[in-house]
Length: 368
Image 1: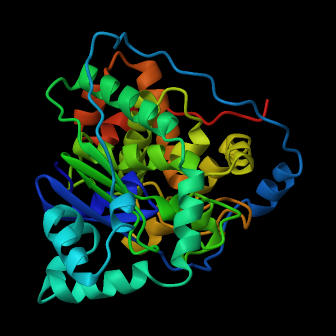
Image 2: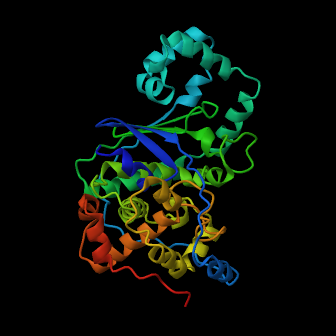
Image 3: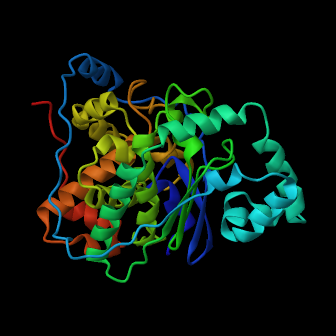
């Protein structure tokens, strides 16, 4: 996998990935600081918000014929194995038998010896509240067929465009919110407890604007957003805000193509109301970026106000959802693909974000 650190927030602004080697990525949550600079047209934005109308659900996008492409999906429910461990010695053996899970999901390689982690993990598995977490996870994810079908269909489409792609094994686990995702080209591990959603007795210790994206329906879009990093080629020299926006947009576009029936809201992690809001205020959002000469901004602190993790972009409006620059970048990529005879493989291989911007000829859609 090819990925450079500055591109992480571009692809999925909720997270930051740390490059381990060519085949291995590990993810951590990242929250960006708020900023109180003056902003343009906020009054117009708020006025427009009061005039919002309903929006319709996404329809399925056209996909290639993948009926002849064979994809084997392998699921390993590690949580069921964890529940059967009777002592810390068995737990230590489990860690040794599942080395990738231990080292990169539980960070066992940071301990002097597996026995230390094994004792801690075994105590955790026997904590009074863990039964509730396991029971609710088991109930929420009793039927994994929809998730596995989405995974299989996505990799059929990926292999249509990239025939040499390996299909990773898929593992699930419950670790009381120790970690939520591990992604590599051979193995994907999902912490199901992170994706229980509203109504769960226990939730991850995150801000509400992040928690709203931790739900069952968001699981596979989130995974595929990360998988897109394997294919999303980025030029390190292009570090302007518009380049960052477009590189994130490429990732979202990729996911929308391999999950053609998934609503855009689940791919970007917005609520339906937030999607309606940004769609009906495109002109105002774009005007803010243009009038404040932000497109070619290269300061990371400034850029993160529009593509980083925040509850809102107050520089535009208190009601403007965070990461709105990433959404605009996605719209620009859509315009580029509509106006140019370009395949998805050519899009993902294109490292010149400024070229994409110029050839997209993006114009925001008005309310009418």
